[in-house]
Amino acid sequence: MKPAPFEHQAPLTVEQAVSVLTEVGYDGKVLAGGQSLIPILNMRLASPGHLVDINRVAGLDTVEVTPDSVRVGALVRHAGLERSESAYAVLPLLRQALVNVAHPAIRNRGTTVGSIAHADAAGEMPAILALTDGVVEVAGPAGSREIAWSDFFLGALETSLAAEELAVAVRFGRFPDGTGTAFTEAARRHGDYAMAGVGVAVTLADGVVSAARASFVSVTDVPSVLDLAPALGGVEPGTSAWDSALDDAAEAVRGHVEPEGDIHASADYRRMLVTELTRRVLPQAADRAGASDD
Amino acid sequence: MTDTTSETLHDVTVSVNGVRHSATVPARRLLSDFLRHDLELTGTHVGCEHGVCGACTVLVDGAPMRSCLMFAVTAQDHAITTVEGLCSAPDARVAPTGESMNPVQQAFAECHGLQCGFCTPGFLTTVTAYLDENPSPTSEQAREAISGNLCRCTGYQNIVKSVLRAAEIRAERAGSDVTTEEQA
Image 1 (tube, rainbow over the protein chains, first blue to last red):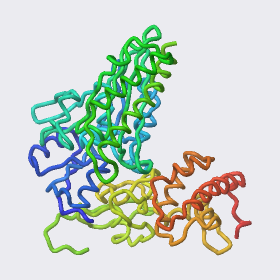
Image 2 (image 1 turned 180 degrees about the horizontal axis):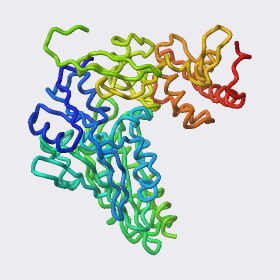
Image 3 (image 1 turned 90 degrees about the vertical axis):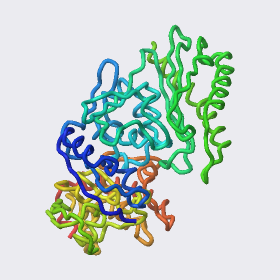
Image 4 (image 1 turned 30 degrees about the vertical axis):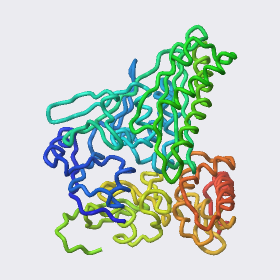
């Protein structure tokens, strides 16, 4: 359970990091928090020749709230984002999801951008990037570029980041006024990888649903967003029509997800689970939307 | 830990329990092994080496982290607190047995919060940092606080009691100012 030998590179700037990544190519791996990477190295599931440790790179540890996004630098730890009051004020979904990421000791070290770049289907924050219609900011040898979430995730643990590129930040999009959000997941033990999870955003206008969307953890290969407006649009939460709309939404989720079974839960169980979880979080999100609409 | 290959070695200096320590190690040296093998501070225990069990938890700049999921080279210049450092905390007092213990250590001793003791260093560091953040947890919050630490002796009931008792001792000691002579 010890990593194979590697060369430790410790750039001090984004430019140096990109230059090292360019030099080492596919033999290099970026180390930020390392809470997913180091277990993989310890178990020797991977043995990159070079680790590009960005922990000393200046300027990557800030959370910025802009009129349309929350921008999170590559060295912001999950715990730092979770505790950010300015981020919580405009996008409570972040904290709602982050408290589900592993355990506090892992969140103290692991980074939000790192977990997105790792692109584990069981990761919460990739799903949240999708739900918020977020963007990944990338630095590379040819300069910087932005990758929309929908172009970023290619498969399990696979992204469109090139070997010589560094994800320097992500921007989570803010929702329109009158939007409420909620997130929940179910795991065998609290803090374990979820068997299924779901985040939702519900927007109300004049008391009825004008927009609703959901994204999922552990039941889709890559993050994907399901538009629930066809099921919930125009319905007033709390009415009898709302109950049958929730049934329709649950059916839409059942058809959308593609879970795989493993030792923890069968595919059928995960499908049932995520359907039920969605039914539970939609009323929460609608309540919060109502509160913010007043 | 000698290695005959031509691995690049790094001079790593970290502050551990307030004392600066240096050692020359390969980049792949985990912080947990650096503490145990290179600095001979064997209080930090190594269980699963993939971040699940929590036995190796140390405080990095005051925050609990898994020392098996950090490299010593990354810890360069950071301040580490291991279980060995807890007894010199400002609110540690000398127990009747003669050892100095911080409130959490005292509570684990009083409440039988350990059986074999393997997981204990990770619990002590985790709970010490947690009480700084939440000085008077409920029983439920105490369970949540220790959810990232595994105990295979299944001593969780007493560990939860220990967390709650540690909060009491901590408050008592904070109230009794910093004089310690009556403890001697």
